[in-house]
Length: 155
Length: 155
Image (cartoon, rainbow over all chains, first blue to last red; front, side, top):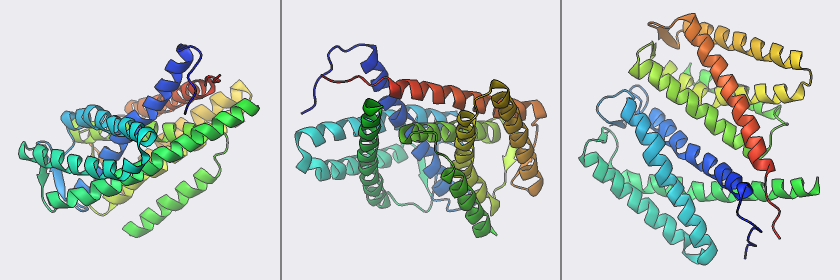
């Protein structure tokens, strides 16, 4: 069980801010990178986003707002479930991947995605791989946090 | 040719990353994400939305994207590593100015090599972009360092 801070003040706000910063940037980075690589005209060209084959303002808004909030929620609930019921983590990742694939299919109905070589059924295993890797990344970040915290205390 | 370009990108990235030893892992992660995101948004805005330059949609596209996603952030991190190694303010300012000149020159060389075409892209815009990117990276580095050093000690 984790100890609680003596007083929730600027220290805790700063720590919280730094945790938010990494996760807030990670998901837009992943979204933009994957769209560039899988959706580009001359490479795989598996799908297009929004109205045109080019990036527009709503693509950037989607990356910054939708992907980051959704990804942050994944990380938040991941940590909650890991703390309360670690044996359900695999089900959580399965469920979140299925939910994301469903949301993607729903978005495609409204034209957010236009599938060319991509099939919605391919999304589920893809998201499974993505969120599985992310859970490993979260664990790695926590480990680095603890290591650097220990080094700081020693110094 | 494409594979050759990608291999060169990966080798250069590896060489740069090997030299980075003055940033903590969390700083490294946060700064990598920040510089990649800023560059991705800038390139997307400048090429697809404002049409200031055209990215090539041929075999060079993948090399360009890989360079943008991995080589550019690692070069910025290498710059930050060098920046922290220097102690004299004059040396830091010289490095900063030299890096801007190298970046702008590199960009012009890539344009000559055919990775992209300028449409309406003046020199001052190049200078503004590269200097802003370096200033933001430096500022973010200081902020992340401050955030990470303000961990509370739990009772």
